[in-house]
Image (cartoon, rainbow, N blue to C red):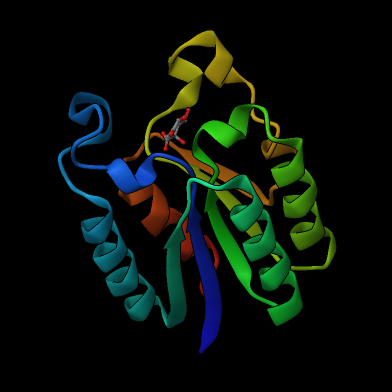
Length: 144
Ligand code: DQA
């Protein structure tokens, strides 16, 4: 089976209680279960991880390169300013792997600071605004 790392950045572990009007009522455990079900249907072996820690996310991207795994990345707030995450994401795509940037919401319709993604320029593609379905669309793009 083709492996995929699904990485979620800061505050996504608070889904369900965090601004439910913006991010929905389902928690990160429900997101994980949903993603694993979709991955299975698509013939992908997914691992879902969440961290509030930039260093840990950078190291997981290094791991994806070394293990030759495509990546679905929701960088959360790091989207807008983390050059460390951008440089790590660039290592994924320049090594011939694919990295899909995903967002639950559509940052382009929100506050101005969210309109910039420092990740988008090194991602294979970006999917935003479809809630949990953003991840299904990303996995679909990575199906074998
Ligand atoms: C987000 C959008 C970001 O602007 C925000 O900081 C998040 C979540 C999304 O999935 O919509 O934490 O990445």
